[in-house]
Amino acid sequence: MLKSIVVATTLACTATFSAALQAAPVVVLVKVFPAAGREDELQALYLQRLAYLRKAEPDATFHLHRSVKEPGTFLWYEVYPSPAAYEKHVKVVMVNFKKEAGPTPEGIIARPSESETFTELGQ
View 1 (cartoon, rainbow, N blue to C red):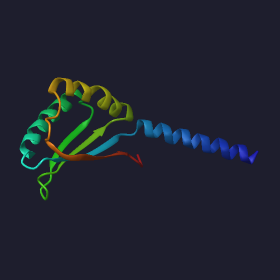
View 2: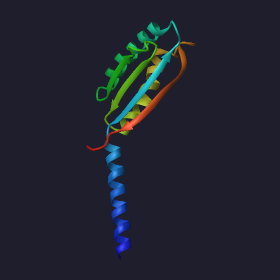
View 3: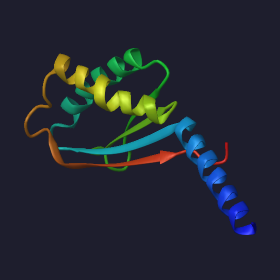
């Protein structure tokens, strides 16, 4: 009897935690490293992307930063209201943006971007 109560409680807690994660905002940080001498070109492209994203996804938050210490490093800070909103960003909005804007110019990125996704805790 006690074992079944513990299992039921564990399953309920897991379901509650899973549901909370599905409703929690998603934060994405992306560091981008442009090729030397092409930083301003990438910045101009990213400012266009920023305007597009803010219009296409008004419920999400987008901030674009350029490092003071390392001006050749850009940081995107993005907040999506839910995992579903982030999935839509990746699968729909960015696909549409790339169709409209065209491919990223060859050689503008020096090395692969670094990204990390976070979910909010303690709501």
